[in-house]
Image (tube, rainbow, N blue to C red; front, side):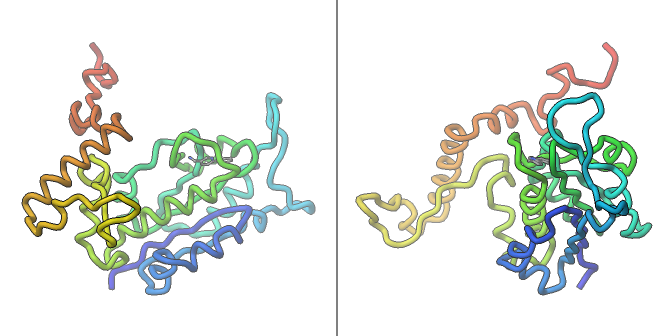
Length: 246
Ligand code: JAH
């Protein structure tokens, strides 16, 4: 076996990871040694007598801000080896399947889970940490987002998902949503399995799936088709976001 992916998670709520890390795909990947996950309580790196990890935000405004020192201390306690440090944040770069593929090739990842109104910006600037968002919504903290990332990355580590074929055929791998799936019974509450799927004609089934995937994508995620039309760079130049001077 090659070196496992090692992920260190920094959090104020370490027990939120107990269940998920023992279950299902993540649990099996850890059990089989393909992925090593260590959960660290940031509060153990708060060294004042009140073990304070948050404070009032400079400039005023509601809510508390996570202090930088315990986060820096927690990261530095992990040693000198180079590692990619990610801060889960609604203000981050958007996580997607391409980023999951990239992260699955890293030897070590550090996931920092913020709480309160946010984390002192010097965590981003000074560690440094890359801010990553799993979607445009606000959670109570980064833990659930870290678990989502961890599962998306872990299933791409070679050996974790048994049928390597099934990885490539899913949503996003071809820029489209997945085609509809059916199993028994053939008739359920008046809804029939499309007859083409029962023919055994694999070329015909392939064409039907492609068309059904396109329809689903048009209906649920038209933005994916617009991105496709602009090419793999998302049409950056046409939109004028080129780095080049005019
Ligand atoms: C909320 C710290 N992209 C999802 C996401 C990630 C993190 C947070 N919210 C949403 C969050 C509060 C404090 C992080």
